[in-house]
Length: 64
Image 1 (tube, one colour):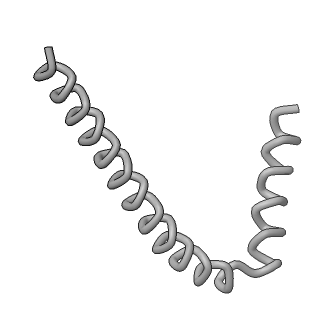
Image 2: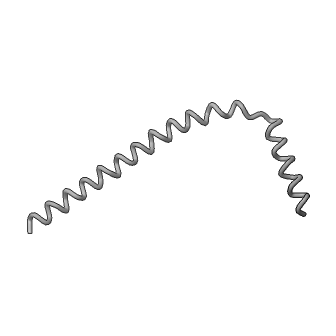
């Protein structure tokens, strides 16, 4: 019966390592994605935002 317990412990350890690796990869991807998105904010101007709002309002009025 000791063999069964040892295999269960090894499986648990491998599962913990797998989840830990996935978490590390997700954190690294989030950091790269954050850096990517921070540079995009400068390209959006107030005029662009106003144009989008006007188009949405026009569609809303069209279907009302």
